[in-house]
Amino acid sequence: MARSNTNPVWNVALYEASHSYVWKFGEDLLTVLNPQPGERIVDLGCGSGQLTERIAAAGAIVTGIDYSPDMIAQARINYPAARYPNLDFRLAEATTFSVDSAADAVFSNAALHWVKDQNAAIAAIGRALRPGGRFVAELGGKGNIGTIMESLGAILGGAEAAEEKSPWHFPSISQYATLLEGNGFTLVSAVLFDRPTPVEGAAGMEDWLEMFGGVFFAEMAAPEKDQRRKAVAEHLKPKLYQDSKWVLDYRRLRVVARKN
Image (cartoon, rainbow, N blue to C red):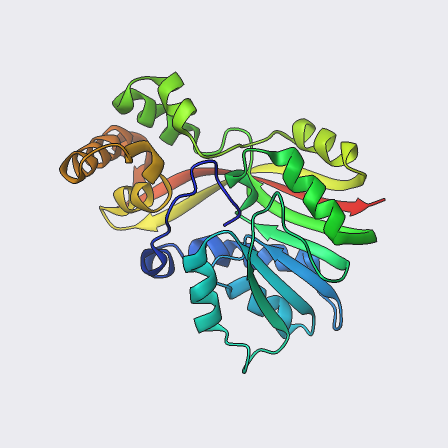
């Protein structure tokens, strides 16, 4: 994860047990990155390190960066330095991180939509890259979880209240292209696409809300949190519960850019 305006505390055990699709979908993005032996690569928002390890396995020298102490601690347990010498996990934020040597690439999967100040994050990415270095990222794009946000608004006091609490920013292609070009990048490609994402089990939506949407319920006592999560799930059920599983209405923005 990169950084949200609310700095949520991550349940790492729940993330690894029930939300592995986050990094598994990112495996396809690794083919776009195409890491090469000896390249210096930053995995920005590395989480508990699964994709960071895949990049290192290609022979690259990788720095995994995440703002969550719990995620970084788990990454170091999963991939200890003694066994993975090409891996270095660091605690830092997407808007202010730095690297010791200019990187050949910055890679980010399912993390940058947690950053409200997108311009600051892209500026930091630019500072980390050598001239000609590449930026390969996938994040939530415009319209991502639109149905879920509608139901959060319906249960929690209206669309404006839900948007005000939202820890996410889901940019359009044009918004992101403008930010990239304004920070010294040339946009190589950008695509916005739907990615319906299944999560199994009748409680899958409540688990998702607990894992990723905690900010919406943060001011409630524990019993009310459970009650409201259940209410949001019931509101969503006619639209997103299909064939005995929940299907999240994800929409992703995938970009490739080069530093000028």
